Image 1 (tube, rainbow, N blue to C red):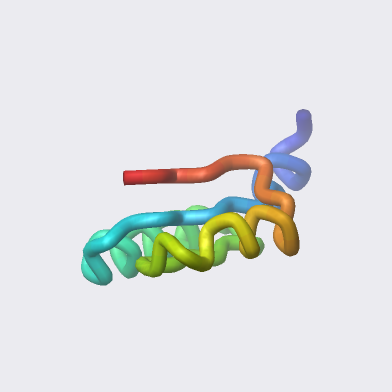
Image 2 (image 1 turned 90 degrees about the vertical axis):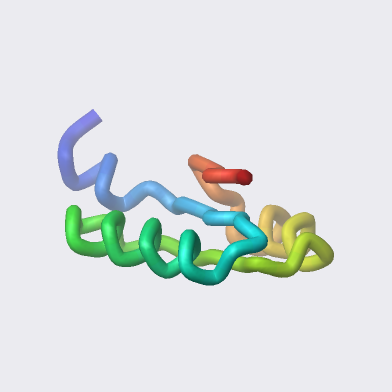
Length: 60
């Protein structure tokens, strides 16, 4: 995979702590990842997985 392909990966962050979500979002976006979404609501996870089709899920 090229760097552009990696940075274009869809990433879903799931954590019950809003501070952790913000930290991970900020770190990933600073590194150049453009398709990052996050939730602290476990009831939204399956809908986001279906709609967003993430390549990577960071789950706590």
